[in-house]
Length: 563
Image 1: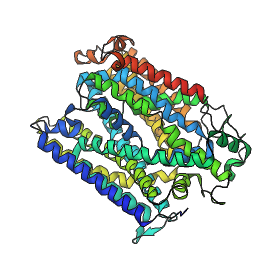
Image 2: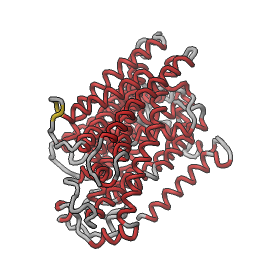
Image 3: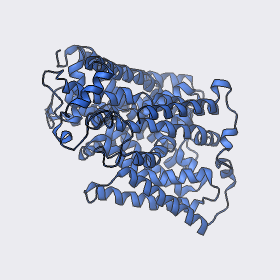
Image 4: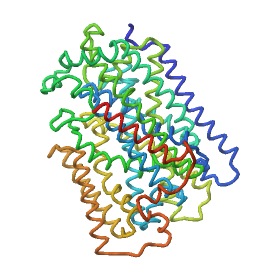
């Protein structure tokens, strides 16, 4: 097998990039031709025309990025399937979005989640969430995606870390090119361009991931051979092999781990910590939830997240499992003694050593697709936040075309900021660790405020604001302590403890400083937790309650199978 990337591969990659930009621009042209007034609604919320298949696929696409392909394979190469918990646990939080959050968001007819928070509480709460949402969109969503995509291109080209290309650092060159290309079609096309390109790119991403998995699975000899190889041989990485790991299906192919596991993800940390991260990410983050806000009606808004939950089953098999297969192939000496130099090189190593010419380019294009779709989603949500939360609230007479202009300028500025923030992720041991640590420090106060806000009428605006400010301060302290390695603890448990502290602050301050519930907020709070389950929306297999129950049972069955 020729392990180099040939001219055909680079032609495929180049044509793909041009096709994505052209598709985004075309969406923008068609949007302008079809709109008759309400330009802002079309640009930011696609005219509230999205149906559940598009919503689910677009949410999945906005979440999946090159980070998943690279970092999940990296983590799996070192520790097995355990990091797949970040995929399967997402299914449970998407059910929460469908049942409890989506109908309230849609009924309020808000363009942004900070707007929702103002209607439920007050304007200061909106300001805090706007700042956090902008930070997460630019740094967490865009920055890490651009950095990982650039790292992949560097590896595919066979360039060592720190190499230069055209007289500049190769990594930064790739970051700039990918960022600018994404910014162009997002600026022109708006959310419609984002969902169009996301839908197309997700298909390509999945095709590439499936090809890698199937080829590797066949080469390793199937499931029985995979299990036997892992159980009978030491790990090829010295730092892992020397960590007192007992090899075999009892830990490497299981999702639930015990205390002291080398992965640092025991089952109780996942059970307690992930909901803190997941509820913020899937239910309260503008970049993800914006697709639900653009739904045609409540039925589409409920079914879209459930479809996304179904799609979240597959990354464990197509993004995580390849890393495990890579370990077994190296143990079998399938590459003539060759192996990834580090776990971070696992996915690019599999691409160059398993796939023929042409398919290398296709899979690399899929990885670029993952990065660009995440960036485009984040850019559009950033433009929406700035246009509506920072400008229209202070100048309510702004016309739609003026808001779109602000959104486009924001897209350019956001792209430049993300390019500058990307290299910061090189600080962490793995990219996946870095992104989840950042989330664990900012998510707890937002998760607490949204949960208590939609289920407890007694949660006051003043208490919500104090909780957000205090929670962000606690998260900043935790970030500094971790950044300077003053304390290295279980970041998932830290997220849970931060959530508990935030809930306590909110409850105590609400009781000390009670406020009457605003009239406009009455429709934004459930009377009881089972109230949303009584709402009839769809019938038969299209009833969201039936679909949610089916998805829930499916995830429970998977956890039993891989316990």
